[in-house]
Image (cartoon, rainbow, N blue to C red; front, side, top):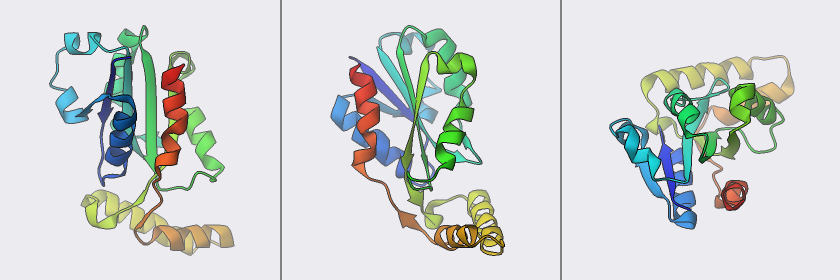
Amino acid sequence: MKTLIIFSSQTGFTKRYAEWIAEETDAELISLSRAKKKNADYFDTYDAILYGGWTMAGRVVKADWYFKRAEKWKDKKLLVFCVGASPMENPEIQTALDNMLTSEQKEFIKIFYCPGGIAYDKMNLFSRLAMKAFASALKKDADPDKQKQGAIISESYDIADKQYIQPILGELKK
């Protein structure tokens, strides 16, 4: 199966997952900025087109470009993998995934979550300030679980692991 992986990565976690998937599938890997420069015919030769992006506020950043084109790619295997700071065990992940696609998109796009982490030193100023403000607000919350979460996300950490691409690989093999 000829596969293309398009990715957008701010701090490197999504790029790492995209590279891991490409290694396992012999997929072509290109950044979203390069994909945007390709003409429509370029995508016709692929059997599967994946988009990988990072999550922020319950959505996949910069995924609109992919979703707009996915309508024309319904004859292909379409997957989205999003990478975020939450561990896989966070119950809010499934709720967020359920809300990221429209009912129609769910018929032809599969979506997956991969835990990445936080790398404050690689974030742009807006993202860094937004995350620090969010962490600060959580640390002041009356709920001890939210205080704990705020303490965790106030520092950089890396929980990315190659094991989390297994469901994606399984879907590609179907």
